[in-house]
Image (cartoon, rainbow, N blue to C red; front, side):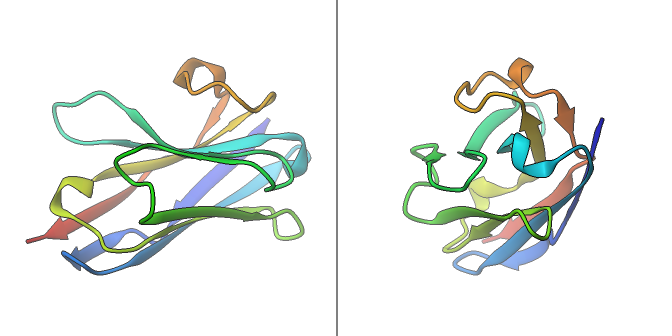
Length: 123
């Protein structure tokens, strides 16, 4: 089992920044690829970014490329999502998730999920 707890969400004006953190406990954190997803009201959950076990490979959705950066610190069992130049359309609940084999963007390949943190961007 891996337990994931997100933090860092909040209310920010358009153009602002937030840094989300996802702290993991349980099994060896570095065994897992990690992903960030978001879900806005009335919309399906979508992948935002993923990162492999070592942090050497990342993926970003086109909608956030150039604005968001994901990183991880395996010594601290934590993965981060730095979000810059936020837009109102970034408003959503953000989730982190863990997958045993990094690469798939399908949410069903992620075995463990956090409870989510709300990000609200005002115009």
